[in-house]
Image (cartoon, rainbow, N blue to C red):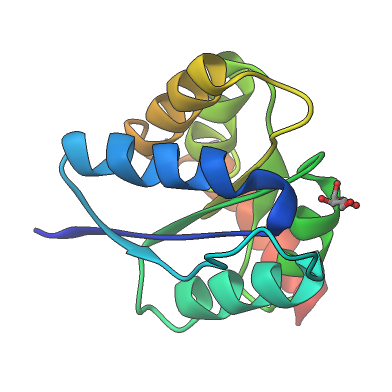
Length: 147
Ligand code: RB5
């Protein structure tokens, strides 16, 4: 089955986003990079929302979004129904948000962590499956809050 990933960022994380795109492709993901492409100052909510809508609609299975801290773009993405996005600065959390929380998006901060660590975090996120079982009960409780 094709593994599909959408990427977006604001101006603060363009280089990191492009490195993430290349890395995800080497891991076998089909990547849709929705920009932006210039370093002109832009607004992270619209880029977080665009990637989140692509995941929520089923167009892409997972999403990775990056801004200066990862926080603003994560907040925007989480406003879209069906999105569970966490900011990670370590590989353990990236694995756990997939395994326990069934996160469908990962956010990172380009001004917080280096590119090498960011690629490892992305890899941990992309290579972990949701654990189901008791975790599904809890994720269902999150979904119920949305409803
Ligand atoms: C942009 O300066 C910065 O605010 C943004 O990249 C991000 O860190 C917001 O959460």
